[in-house]
Length: 204
Image (cartoon, rainbow, N blue to C red; front, side):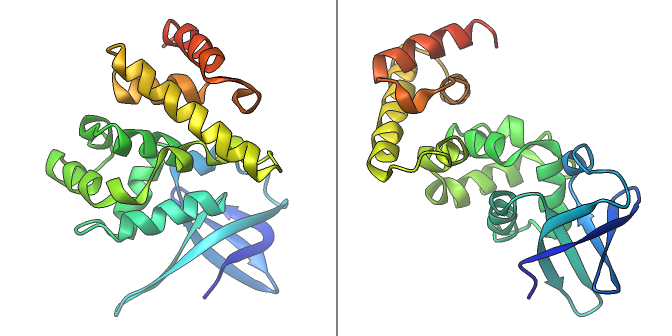
């Protein structure tokens, strides 16, 4: 119903903010991570929102980007995870970190989120594994690249670099993080990405 709400940040409480738009104050539940990037009260904000409708309540959940909102929708599609649970997961880890964890079968990392046990984490990975990809993981980094052909080549180069690192014995999650941390990867060949990623490995 609401794609996003643009208005004035009127109130900030423990787990919810109030955004005033068109004379109406909207209660919006947000992640813990989003609290860290909120502007000062009285400033204009744009919040991407999801309206949860239940028999006993209607609640708005808000996110800083469409990418975060997209992953929230994927999470609530997992059996046993509701809106509050999905918000808790995205408070504990970013959408990118969650993608890496899913791709690397890292249930341990996901189970650190409040209210998420090992079984739920495994089920989340099982249900989302075919809905995320390396291309999704690098999507934000490639967003500024206008040339579509260049994007596809970059995706392939980064994917090959990750595969090379895992072949060398590094964990999949470790490899994904190292490659993602390479600056200007869009302008680099596989070998150069691999060299830079190996340097990043020493920093993790």
